[in-house]
Image (tube, rainbow, N blue to C red; front, side):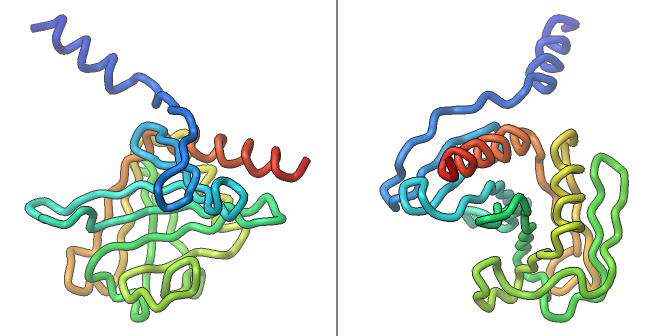
Length: 183
């Protein structure tokens, strides 16, 4: 029993193993890093992002929640995008992130409704402010999990939970790819 418990702890504590980049049938360059996927459009020459998804209990959907960090071209900056089915993005009055218990409340107006590309995704918000997004990404990297809460709750419970296993490796892979393109 004790050996099984220790083996389980080793698996949980093990760092995410990065996989090699591959070209997806969509033309995106992709690489898996634990629970995160690094993606660069146009066979690696276009914009890059790292993304993780989750499913609500009992859901039959491919994913109900998505957290993405988008590397902004021609800058060292990131944007953070969060999607939760039923989140009333346009009507949000409060948004906070809890990184392994450490809460960061975003100031009103720090997010905008819609997805990163500007599409009207009613259940998605983006944080584009460079300082706020950099702080969120920096907090993600050493963490194990992040819980986002929002008000009003909308159709869901007002909570979106994500694993951070692999986010550092995914972000680092994207940084290396972007820097290599700039040389």
